[in-house]
Length: 85
Image (cartoon, rainbow, N blue to C red; front, side):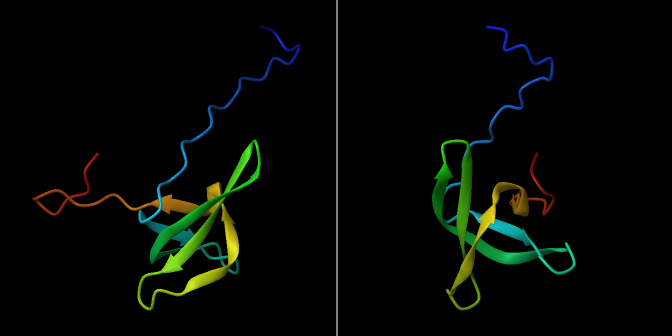
């Protein structure tokens, strides 16, 4: 059904499951940093999911929520040590 807007709709990304290894984008310099996992997902509103993040080294849950575009799933390596596609 046309909406009168010619811009294509971006399909929503599926939420990342709790326990999934992730990298987070640093808020200061924008660099990606590993060693984290999704602790929980939080629906900020029907169109936005945010993530509660746990630091794996000590199990601490970070005090801020992360937006979808500030986290990235870590692909696990296959038997050859190369990331799987």
